[in-house]
Image 1: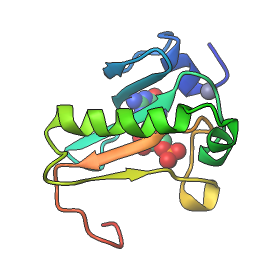
Image 2 (image 1 turned 135 degrees about the vertical axis):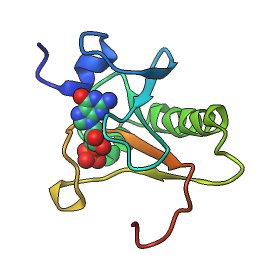
Image 3 (image 1 turned 180 degrees about the vertical axis):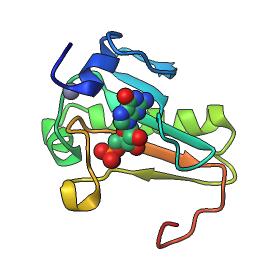
Length: 114
Ligand code: 5GP
Ligand code: ZN
């Protein structure tokens, strides 16, 4: 069993409902959805958070966002609207230390979240 849960999912060693299977990016449904569409988009390589991914500077963060939008299109929520969230740090609710974009939609999105 790998040490990182999302590295395990990216490697296919831990089961997940995959909705997009790219060369550098993979997307799968959140096990505890907070909206009717709740998909996690991750790079296959391990970065602890979005700042570390941005620092890599190899276009992977751009690709992650592009794929997050493709997920929204495929889920039929691109026109109604969706949210991309990177929880960063424990105080913000980050519980998995492998960067992941939450793609949330399919219900009215309010701010603050509720
Ligand atoms: P965070 O709280 O770090 O921003 O987001 C972690 C997300 O991963 C949570 O929304 C949680 O429901 C989801 N999650 C935790 N364990 C698993 C798992 O084993 N499989 C899947 N598909 N999602 C998970
Ligand atoms: Zn990892």
